[in-house]
Image 1 (cartoon, rainbow, N blue to C red):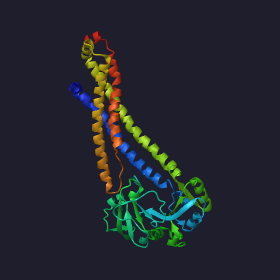
Image 2: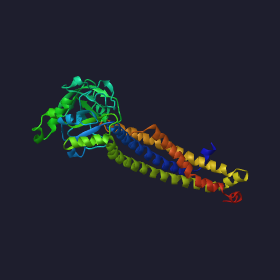
Image 3: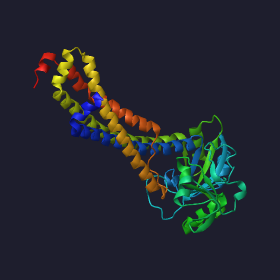
Image 4: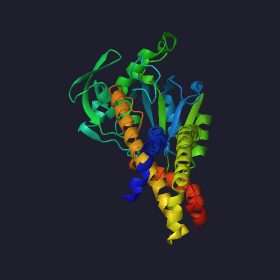
Length: 388
């Protein structure tokens, strides 16, 4: 009660200080949640690419949308260190899709079970089922959690993709990464749709059954993945490979820098709040000089004075942290709900982020109160009693 009474002596100043901490924590929670979402996407990509090599046309710098020849599968399968090589088709689901935060809705076509059990990224159906090899030739799809929500898809309902109608036979559990925004369909159907999208100068030269978007290669256990990738590029003309290590280097380093920048902005806001705490506690010490002198005169030690004032500063930080966390969580929830209909989830607020935010605000308050508290404890009791 004494602690709260001391904080309530100057309600406006204390309130403004708490507001400063609140704004900093609000920024920390929002930006950290955005960084969490980015990191979860990168971690999902790292998990996906970690045990495989993805082969594409070299014209697009490793991320080409140009088709690759199915014949390349045979050539790759004969390379030392290659266990399984399977063709896949991938393209953007909406021809008029615009660039936005996060991956666009993507169609992925492949023969179910062709990986022979090598795929380590497990997908589970929350409704219906996954695709099977018997689905080849059928207009059926399995939808990721986010794209199913954005398109209001229902199990057994119809879905139109680039003018073709499909039946939804399954909806996946959320994975917090790329499959959430993907639509999975049989390989031969995806091939025909990819062929329709090619410029006439290319489509007239090849049939739909001769092309794929990429070839996914699963190396033998213990194989030197970079060496296998180099051998593939040497054996397949105009090919480019992407390994898990390269994915982490290209994508992981970029997102790490972005995460550091947005977290740094939030921390700068918190530093401003910390200066506000120092100012508030310094003014509080000046106003309570006689009170501190009386406490020292009747036997209160310096440690007790320091402890009391640092506790007050810590409470200011704790209250600001709680309010900032609440406001930040509200922004995260509202923003995610607003973007959910379009399949754009920007934020991911985790328990560790929440605990860190409140804990950091509390520690910041305590640390900011050290200088005023130490100054108060070193006051001469007699001079303090004479202070007007």
